[in-house]
Amino acid sequence: MALLRNILFLALTLAFLSACSFPVRTGYDRRIGGYKPARTAQAQQPAPQTTSEPAAVATATTTPQDTVKPPRQNSSAKAHAAINKKEVARATPKKATTLEGVIKPWLGTRYKLGGTSKSGIDCSGYVMVIYKELYGIALKHNAEGIYKDERGKKVSRGDLKEGDLVFFGDFWGISHIGIYMSGDRFTHASTSKGVMISPMNDKYWSPKYKGAKRFK
Image 1 (cartoon, helix red, strand yellow):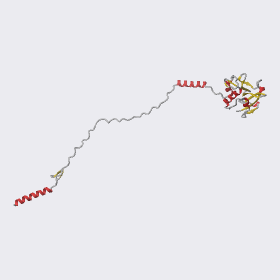
Image 2 (spheres, one colour; image 1 turned 120 degrees about the vertical axis):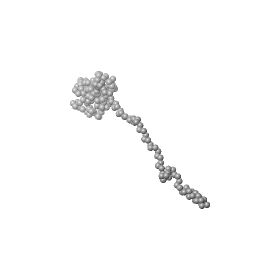
Image 3 (cartoon, one colour; image 1 turned 135 degrees about the vertical axis):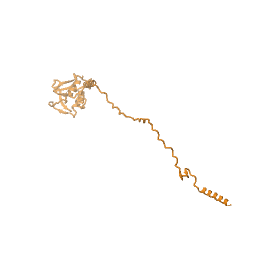
Image 4 (cartoon, rainbow, N blue to C red; image 1 turned 60 degrees about the horizontal axis):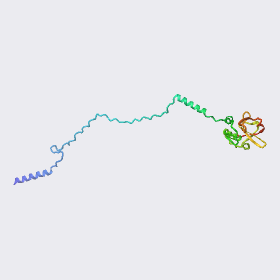
């Protein structure tokens, strides 16, 4: 009986110790009273260094745009161009700036009543065209009308200057007009000889002289 109690007591003691024992934990070693060091992953082996050459980095090289230069002219081309310019200058007539120069192309133009061109012109038309071209002054196409134009200033025979207008006529009034020139001459469109230059003391025109006017 005593033995039975001892066995029962021992069984209870073992059961109690089993219940109070620490649970088995992963990595815990009762023999050493602690946790075993966890296995670490194998040390990572360094990646093998590649001996390949680094990829060439493409660099965009910008080249400045070439400056477009005009083709150089050789000396012969320049000389040829200079000659051409001179020829053009000679071929282009210069505008006359003197009375004698302006009337020169008109000399010999036939008389035509009412005309105003080189195909035919009358005395007042001739004066009108020359005055407009040389002095920029617009006049009437009528000798008597020009004589009465108040823009003109009367000039005595002894004070005549180149460009003054000279008038001729008879008892009935003014019938002819011309432009005074240096050397005591005048240019006009004669009914018989067309555009011409005559002396002021011409035996036909001198007695018919009626006066002069200055418009410029």
